[in-house]
Length: 295
Ligand SMILES: NC(=O)c1ccc[n+]([C@@H]2O[C@H](COP(=O)([O-])OP(=O)(O)OC[C@H]3O[C@@H](n4cnc5c(N)ncnc54)[C@H](OP(=O)(O)O)[C@@H]3O)[C@@H](O)[C@H]2O)c1
Image (cartoon, rainbow, N blue to C red; front, side, top):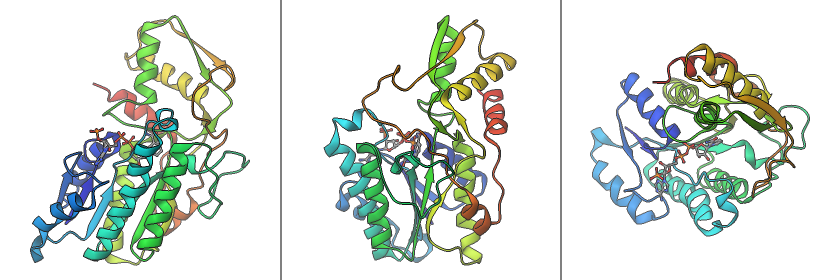
């Protein structure tokens, strides 16, 4: 049985949907099982010690994801992003279960000029990236033989706050907006990442998928400004944007925020595509599908 932790977050909700679609045997928890409290995790698992219901996978989608707030909320960000995954991996070790843990492109500083591969050095720029990097390391140290770290980026989904919904909302209410045009990465539809999680679980039941770090985003690259322009184009096309908002480019300097972001965080997906024998969708294709289906 699979235990999905953080099942009510943006990604967790998509993963829940895909688990149901794939008829997986799974159970989900949200805040009621606190990942920062080992006893809370252990007492939940004790309900599943029956041989038929034994937990053999834990997927962790819970995290502290408020990148700017983390700069001042270091203690909680560290508890959720570092201690949480450490607790979960320790429990996996006890159970003999495998773990999928979600991480981020923000473990890098953005000075690369070609896509980051999984073996490149950690160099986070802020508290969020630092605590996520430490979380990865804790998992890899605890269960190197049983853990998969999936680093993703620029995630959006149908549930919860994200860039696509924020842009659509602004584009419906403002005459003009400015969006940063000097940070490059890859938008990722959470449904696509949820599909990859399902594929990873299914395939590793029948073949040996090497454990370790994998990068998983949609394909291609863009800037936040170009991403916003595409949202505008598709939003108008599918009747989700009705105003005449003008989208202007601006620089990172012109749009100050608390946490420093990597200027370039495109991730190479070659390892994932090769080891799982899959191809990933282009970000524009996924975005169109997403916007078309917004209720
Ligand atoms: N969003 C992005 O652009 C992005 C980019 C790269 C990587 N990622 C990574 O992707 C993963 C999923 O992100 P997301 O955007 O889906 O995050 P999210 O929507 O913020 O979901 C995180 C979930 O964790 C839960 N949570 C908070 N504290 C908890 C605790 N003590 N115990 C158990 N659960 C707790 C939250 O519960 P509440 O709902 O009650 O707060 C929330 O449902 C994270 O690992 C994140 O770092 C995200």
